[in-house]
Image 1 (cartoon, rainbow, N blue to C red):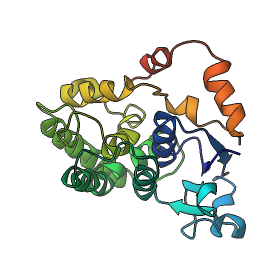
Image 2: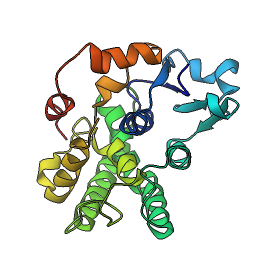
Image 3: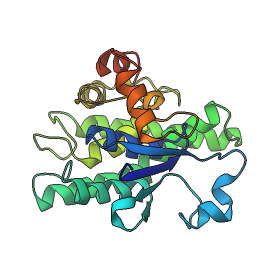
Length: 237
């Protein structure tokens, strides 16, 4: 049995963050598709795992079946458990945590929620959509400025969980109507993430049905012999 079991949905940016970190860390995982349109996430069986009724939810079978929820908390949990992407010092880890809070507060609505409106998953009045567009543009501009002269968000030589967290929104920016190529420092940073060993795009890591870990490995490695970067280059960020 794979140690980790990820419950999520294939359109969920937060679910992708967790799947990406697991894959980059070389951790196979069972994937359990949660049918959000039918309200499966609000049913007692799922609420027993995640009291908030949201995705993602990560089950750690090596830790007495502990269920960890909220993508930022899950990434930090994986840092502790797997010893990767945690930063080179306590200060760097604190900065990574700050970035996660900033992204959730200042950028996530302007990308992930706006993407939901643009793709017809949710609806809102035009003035609400305009508000999120302005919010997203401002956050992307701030991010572009901060990344000037930096390789990774926290300023170190290696990426941290903050880079994966923020990328979990940036990868969907095109769907929300943004052109990342107009933000050169964000674009260069995003391509550095894409170039990480074992990187995969959302469509590769998040199937539209539940899969056992063995099946996922076969589909990602055994069933497709092309290098991971071949897929990545096809994704516009």
